[in-house]
Image 1: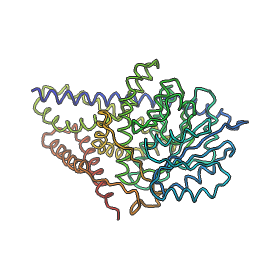
Image 2 (image 1 turned 90 degrees about the vertical axis):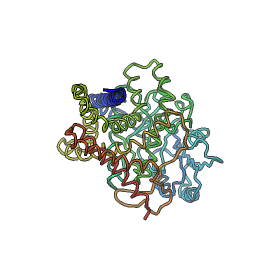
Image 3 (image 1 turned 45 degrees about the vertical axis):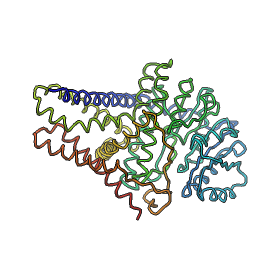
Image 4 (image 1 turned 180 degrees about the vertical axis):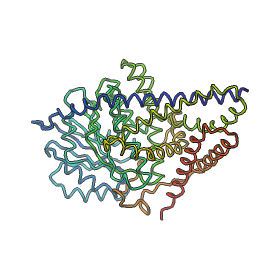
Length: 492
């Protein structure tokens, strides 16, 4: 074995080790979720949602060019079952199209509500800048935030504000629902992944007393918490994760309400999916660069530090998956040329343990929808398989985002377009806010699909089938991402 082969094996092993550790962290969250599910349910039922005096609440609605969904958003917020004299609504409108005139016309229908239509002279700081700007004139003790595509229920504020039972509670975050989960295969797979985050991941961290995060929308902040943590800052693309960590390091407590759902629209076009994934993964890497050392030096318990580390570095999984995939083809040659290393390569079976941990994590999330094991399993098998494939297919795109974040390369905040899609109705084609899905990376995704197809051929050529399932999934994943990118680049 030469130095090059040894280096490939070492890097390959390190990537597998990180994936394994990340999977074990997710398995631990799954265990915490199951162990504390009953306690969380009993705690929610014991909260009295009929307070004698309701505190003042400011609802902030950050907008940027949302002509298709802004009216339904205003209607939903205006329908809140909350004392109007205690409610302030801020429409933080940075739009450059006809969204502004649509808002002005819509507000004429609500003369009895305290609604501020706030316009800034510049879009400095993007969403974080708008939220911080509105905070200057916010009169509420609590700040509820909703992105433009969300449709909170009328009782949302009462169910969340009632959970601020202690002065050190800084945030109540709720679960996202999906208005158009069944719109396409792409939206179904996004819902599959998000549902796991908004049940097992958030619920497990909350149950274990570990750091969770405000998800940018569908949650309520205590205004004093925002101010104490330093306010909204625009130096990362995930201003929500950034502020969450600054607040929790300072001792503020966060609550996650799985039982309260706020439905929203999932992006239906590959260009929009990639843009959203880029923002989330790069922003997480930027936040890790900003806060990881500070968290490790803090006085929080060691288990919380470990989970915070994997939380902040979770986007690094995409780099590890990509590197492992790229090296898996030369690994086949190395195995064939070095039969004496057979025992070492058997250690690669640790990847199966990682897979089993993820099966438990995602199966648990899906089970919460029906509470029927067999029904869950029948649906789970194809959904989980395709979800893993497409996640692998996005690994090149997301790895570039993570690398930029870790290296400190800055880019503008690009919001995800919304088109008022519900169930299987509506279309994003021929609409404004279209996002291109073809780039140099798209071409590379197509080339990688062919590369891993060569890996399949090589498995049969060498008679080594250990990595065959992995290469099949990579071909499907990169092929699907490449295909959807081409398909969705056409608007007609």
